[in-house]
Image 1 (spheres, rainbow, N blue to C red):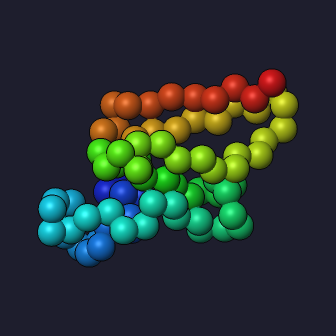
Image 2 (tube, rainbow, N blue to C red):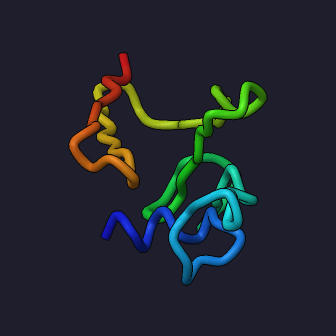
Length: 82
């Protein structure tokens, strides 16, 4: 699961990430713009200009959104929409 979500961000999705296979797609939209469907994802890299990214997330109040790092699956979190 994690590999299938992370690899589309890479220059060559069939090879592991390294200096010769960098991230070239920082935002993936499977649906409309924004994080609104399964498969939408963002990448944040060590390069100073890619340490943070802003994306639109729309959800109704009371919704809980869960997320996972595709490279480090033990890194997980949630956003509670108020």
